[in-house]
Each structure stands twice: as structure tokens, then as C-alpha cells.
Length: 419
Image (cartoon, rainbow, N blue to C red; front, top):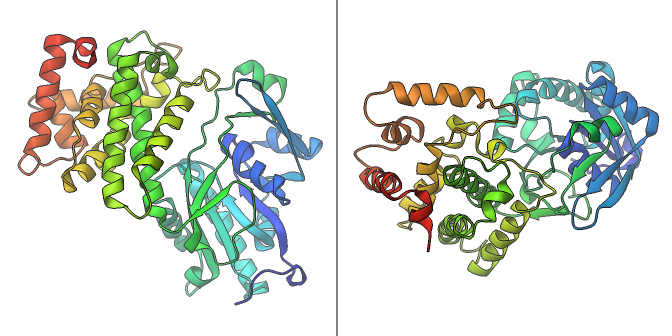
């Protein structure tokens, strides 16, 4: 196969980006536009697309001690309903990216598959790469399986299409209604601007763009995101809520020294497991610096991140391979300590935070109905039926969790974590 060139009919410097949401505009579109690419947004938001095409630029407001404004140009948009136009853009794209969220993936995949089929008919010698910029584990595997359903039999998917796993570490500040009404296109962002992605999955040369960070062992970096970033987020939300249910923002919880310390200790325990599993990728110094940077970012008031948002959706976040139970499993398998991570999980069993209107997350209401309806104590039911630990093989997890809960009931979380 040949690499892309300008004479092939392929627009080598064109990114077709499915999803003009916050991550799409503030991160993926911004990186590629500033890297010299034309960015073509595909989205179902008709008003947003019309405004993109009217202005042909938008602003990214970097929220920090002093706001910085980036003007992103060389962009246009296509309404996702105009499928023929979308297919044409995909068939001639230099590179494709997807940032639509899991619920929107199937619709995007259908159009991408149609575009790939047309592309292969016209340009069989020119493969294409798809950056899967989704906050989900094993996103590239999921995307590949979805794509196969819509491609014709015999399509050379593995040789013709590079499906690029990413680790999305960028956090997007909360935007108020007045911010959106002021300018539908503007988007807030934090200064962090690094896109970690799988070096080995590309079929074409990796774009020479500032901010792209290709990695050899992508699984290690996906685990780093889940078991340090997501774990730290969750630990701060669950511990913070139990400490003071009136806390609204994550920075309020982390401003308490004892909460900050136990959250950091949980993150460091996860880091110890990652270093043992991936010694060629990570060092103590590297992950310690990463943890301290994350905690500083978590405490940014400009993010406006709420304890409710960070902690809600318990059935997913307490799942067997997710941020807490998954990190405990990893530590158990490597004979590493996990008591601080387990403390966060026990706190999660009492997480009933509400949104600004006083409502719990809908699936969390069902979550507590389910774990309360089972025989036995609620924490044990969560560890067994949600986290999927085996009551026989994982006796230590159940025993230690029961001890932590007993201490919380006897002493209170404030006394338990105080020094």
C-alpha cells in the first residue's frame, strides 16, 4: 500500500471529526487546526453546525489563573443528517477522528463504514487512520467490532484502516447557561493539552502535530488513566461526600488536608501496582509527578467539577474492571497493598449525592434498590454482585472492607482519616 499523497484525490491535510462537542472542539479539533489541518466537524446539532459554517472560526477559552483565548480557524461543519456529504468527506479524508460518546458511536460508525467502502472502491491503495477519542476502556476494540458489522464482507479492515486507541486526560470546565448563550461556539478548556495515542496502530505516518504523544505500550497508558486519574477522581468524590454531604465541588473536598492525603495515598497505591506491571513504562518519580499534577488540576476552581458528576453512575464506576475494583484486582494479583483504594470503595457504598436540583442520578436510585433488595449487608452485596469479587477466593477483600465499614460506623470518616 501507498501512503497518502496530494495527487491521489485524498485531502491529506483534512481531519473529519465526528463530534463537535467539548472535547471535539477544545481538544481534538484545536490540536489539528493549529497543526495545519482543515477540520471538518460532523455533528447532529444543527444550530452548532450552521454557526460553524457562518463564522468559520470559534474560540477556546483556556481557564487558568489568567484566561487565554485561542481562535481556531480553517474549520467547517456538516450536519450528520446529510449522510451523502459525510460519506464523501470520509472517503477523501487525510485522517478521521471520533469524539461522540458511547451512545453516539453506532450512528457515527454507520457513516464511517459507508465512507470507507466508497474510499476503498476509489482509492484502494490509500489507507486511513481513525482516532477513537472516547473516554472508555478498550475503545479501539469496541470500535473495530462495531465497524465490522457495517462493512461489506471481505473488506480489508485490519490492513486498510488504523484504529487508534487514545487516553483522554483533558478535563473540560463547566460552562454556565449564560456562557452558552453568549456564544454557542465558544468552549472552555484547561491548559493540559496532551493526547496520548497508540503509536503502533497507525497505517500512515503519525501527524507531526504538537500535543500528540504516541506510545508504544498503549495498554499501560490506558491503565494509567483509569487507575490513577479516574481512580483519584472517584476517591475524592466518594470520600468527600461521606466527609461532608454539603460539599458541592471537588475542590472543596480536596481542600481538606485529610481527604487530600488519603486520596493521594490511594492513587500512590495504584501507581505502585502499575510500576510493578509496567516497569519499562513507568517509574516512581514519573507517576508521583503525574499524581501531584492531577491533584493540582482536580482542585482548580475554574473547572467547576462537582462531586455529584464525578461520583455518579455507581453501577459503572464500581464495575469489576473499572477504576476502583479493577485497581484492587490488579493490586491483589501483584501482591500489592490496596487498603486506601478499598476505603474509597467503601465510601462509594454510601454515595447518594444529588445534582443542583436535588435529584440523584437515575441509575443510582436503581443501584441502591438493587443492592438493598439482596439478602445480607449492602456493602457485601456491592462487592459481590457489582464489583464481582468472589466470596471464597477474595476473602481478604470482603474482610478488610467490613473492617473499614465497622471503623467508619464506630469512629466516623473524619476521625478515621485524621492524623
